[in-house]
Length: 221
Image (cartoon, rainbow, N blue to C red; front, top):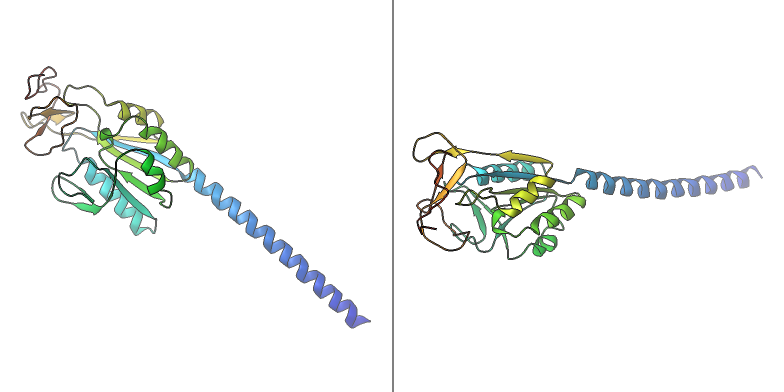
């Protein structure tokens, strides 16, 4: 009789332990999802050309990878200055990157990443901001880097929108190519009707507010 009671008690105990284990696993999964969602954030690094925005982006992505996070670097497909499948700084630092044509591609390309770095965000339309919000809502840390003002000194719409939703905004400056003071503007030296003309050294120069001419670029417009 005592043995039978012991067996019944053992079976009941095993059943209780299995039940508690299942409940704990469910709780941990829910908690992990909740923690991942809370960890999502949007960071914006902006400023004129030659301010070190891409360098800062590469550094953050490198540190995140070293800390064991799944990292994805993204660039607009139209930016082929230094390499088609790489993000490259003006002084040659580089990391592998995925090229995208439109903002919707980010959702599929970045669904398994924990940290996403997007370079040259001013190349994209304003819908990029909504995609970044969706990714952050999924728990992804999104770092955006781009030029804030065009060659007329006017803000890019996507940068304006990102600045309103970003958890952190870092505005960098360069050195004015004329006087050596702090530069917050970008002077375009090549002609072109488009607001964005892909180029680097020789096509653009950083300028301070005093040395920047808002009314003309190389095309006279």
